[in-house]
Amino acid sequence: MPDDVILITGATGYLGSWVTKKAVDTGKYTVRGTTRNANSSRAKALQEKCPGINLYELDLLNDEGWAEAFAGVSIVIHTASPFNMDPNFDYVTPALEGTKRMLRLAKDARAKVRQFIFTSSLVALNYGDTKLEERMYTEDDWSKFKGDEKTYDASKTFAEREVWKWAKANPDISICTVNPGLIVGAPLISGCTTGTLDIWNMMYEAGYTPPTNLSICTVEDIAEVHINAIDNEISKNHRILCAQIVPTLCAFEQTAEVFNPMGYNFPTAPLPDCVVCFLFRCCCCINPLQMAKNQLYVDWKLDDSLARKLLRKGKHSDFNAACVEMTYQIIEDGLLPKKNGYKSRKN
View (cartoon, rainbow, N blue to C red):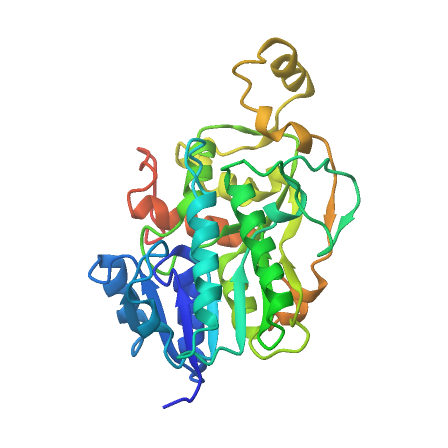
């Protein structure tokens, strides 16, 4: 039995399940995972794919049961955080309170945690009140908020700030954060695509994309970065920025090529400039691009050199191929409609 015990929060989630599998596959660790429902179909599927994993049914907003899950833990990978496209959802409360709880438990007398890896996001880099600029963004950049926002980007920023504040007060525990962009790729467990699925629901009949850049990465790459950051000196006290920055249209190129002949209408062109102008001049109250206003026509870049050093291949995987595989999977799972012309991969 391996001496090191890893606790992975959100183990039945889209990213968490892949992190869990890659941790189990190393054979180096005793792996524990947390989930909100240990009897769910997702929990059972994870246990089938990750033999030997111990699952704990726990709530990030409640102390009950966490001390037992943390007992003897050497490494914590905190992936659990809500993500969808609901503009009325309070993302900040569960993200911030859950993170504070995990950090407090990491110092518990029953735990022997030596490393805490936190899943943040690139939305903690240049969102909110930050003016997006045409330059290279690094781990020194931060999104700015007034402090009372409840949005997803605010939640990731506030929670990550809390992690680094805590790190200064607890230098005996190694800290790093992993900051992915939009995560794509086939889920390990059916139905686990969270906010990525929301975006695909908006795009499968959209035909166009806004004239923006998109940060995009594959779920297996991000999971691999989490595992390879364990006990790795190059990751200690760093924010690991992990994504490719491409025009948003590029994220749908192969998906449109494969699925549009089946009756879908994934984007094949950016919105014409005249349409963008019209939306901001004449549709101020119902402008679908309003939230992306600061990102339009800005060709920004990302220093992802540390992430690439932590990837086994030394480079990112093909996000277009991952998008195609994911699209097949979510259609087969009934999460996107099957058009009359749909053909599965088996045909």
